Structures are given as structure tokens and as C-alpha cells.
Length: 398
Image 1 (cartoon, rainbow, N blue to C red):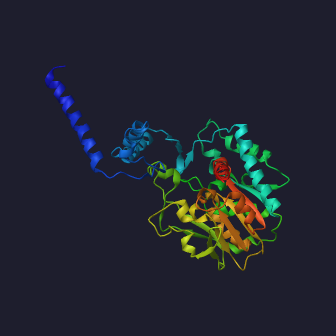
Image 2 (cartoon, rainbow, N blue to C red):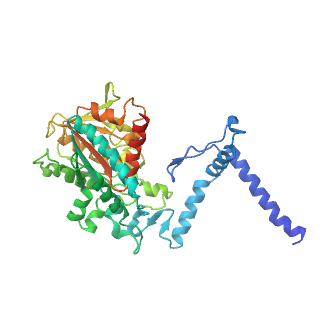
Image 3 (cartoon, rainbow, N blue to C red):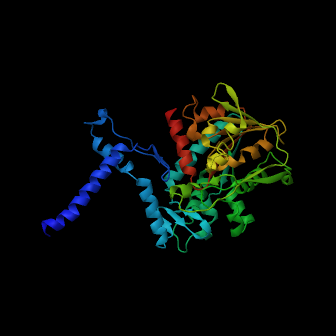
């Protein structure tokens, strides 16, 4: 290659490199990645210079803050889809705008035993303080809609097998296990189960949550004679529903899904209180329920309930079917059932363990000190271990 030809290659290359470095310097660093749902590495400080991890910190910063990173990721996903690929990143993009996750991995037996031990220990705390204990397993989308996956997809039984092993290690003397997924498989056809879930998110929708709630209540010993004909559906379609899977795929799938709510025809006068372990503060409904209902793009938490509203949230209803109180240790699947539980129980106490770090209370304290008659662990059938791991870490710190 002669010098003249080399210039035509090297000079543009250098210009691109310098331009990208210049853009990197002048563009404001982003705090988070929407598509990856995580915080991004920030510029190392002067104090970091000279430390052993400075190089790795700078590499992470440069990678996370690379100019047009999100845009390039979106372009790559679109090209993959145009080329006929149905698996992009870790998701299957399927017919009729369905997005399904890579099936869960098989969990080691020891990990499952350790996870069950945490629930068994907390259940004993509850029983020793005269509380009845339930574990309600809510059916994750991947376990209920296996028929949507491409043929020969590996691992479709892993989540169910993990849950069944976990169930076998629970203390049956103290805990009554409610498997709403089993009820879904018995009651609904494949097409009917599709109506219970969002296409582009990992959660069930309000209808699925209602059917799951019915399954829970019908399997509880304390509650009888609920008139399900008193419930009706309201559909909210003013904002664009942005599913979590679709967000992680840079909004690759263009489908606007309605947001359904199930509620009593005559809505009771619910009262809401935030509790920090010492005092209660009354809050408005719009501060905790459907807080993002008026935004252009609505995430699942914004449509129903964000977990950070439940570092302890109490909902009271003077006209509830029962005078009993229930404490629910929850994940995000529980969100759309907040009103539904409040129709049945005089007081519903909601705790999301991921957001209790600011409370001066251990999980044992929360259960022991609660005046609830019933304690319910309510976690989805795929991610239950990660949620209970949060409890384990919290208990170890305290």
C-alpha cells in the first residue's frame, strides 16, 4: 500500500477517533441505562487515581458512557430482527408482539434448601407470635405461556421444578402453600392464559392478578363466601404501556397494550398510611396507587404500585368482608392485588423487602411486632429465590 492510499484510510480513522473522544468529553454522563435497567458507571474521581481498581473503573466508565451507546444498541437489535432472528439479547421476540424471557436456570439443591430455610425460620417467628402463615406462589409468565416459545427451547420446566423443590422443603406444620400457577393450568386454556399477561412485560396484568387473587382467597381457611360478581373491570388506555422486556430491547416492539384494573363495582373508602416502625403518616391514594397513570409512558409499577411505596404501607377499609389483618411480604406481582386484598381484610400491611433498608427494623421485627392475624409470603414462581435472598441479606445485617 502506497502512502497516498494509506492517508485515505488513516486520516478518516483518526478523525473519527478524535471526534468520538471530543463527544465523550462534552456530552453529559448518563446516570442509568433504560434498556438495561441499571445504573451506569460514573467518571472516576481524583481520589480514585492511583488505586488498584482505577483501571477497571475507568474501563467501565468509558464503556458505559460511550457516545450513542443506547442508539447503537437499538440499531443492532433492529438489524437482528430484520435478519429474521427471534432471539435478541436474552429475549425471544415472537409472533403477535409477544416477548418471552430466556427460561430460568435449574437451581442447585443446596440453594433451594437455604432459601426454604429462610421462610421456615420467619414462619416460626410468625407462629410464635400467634399468626397464621401462608406462602402464595404467583405464576410467572414464562411458566404459564410455554407454548409461545420456539419448539425445542431448553429449560422450560426449570422454573416449575425449582418451585416444586422449594415447596417440598417448606415446613408444612407452620406454612400452608398456595400454588396459583397450578390453578391457572387447571382452569384456563393456553389462549385464555395469554389474556392474563402483558405481551411485552414480565408481569401478569390486572385480570391475571385478579384471577390469582381469587385462587389465593379460595385456598385460605379464614375467608368464605366472597361474591365475585361484585367485581368489574376498568381499562386504562390513555398512556403508552412500556413493558419491562420491551424497555430492555430499546422499545423494539411497537404495540400499545391496555392496562386493566379489577375492582369492586362500588369502590370502598380505602385509607392509606406509611409506617416507619414508630409512627404512621396518612398519605393520599395517588401517592401509592397508579402513581404514573397520567404519564405518556407507563411502566407496570407506575400503572399499579411501585415496591418503594411498600417499605411499610398499610391500607384500611372499614367495610372489608373480614375484621382480620394481613401482613404480606411481597414482590411486584402482588401490586395489582392491593385493592383486592383490602376488600377482604380490614387492614392490609404491605412490605417489599427490597425497600426496607431505611427502617430500623429487621424482617423478624416486622413480623413479630405486626398486629396482623395472618402473614403471607407472596412471590412469583420464577424469581422467588432472588426475593428471599434480599430477606436473607437483611436478616444477616441485623
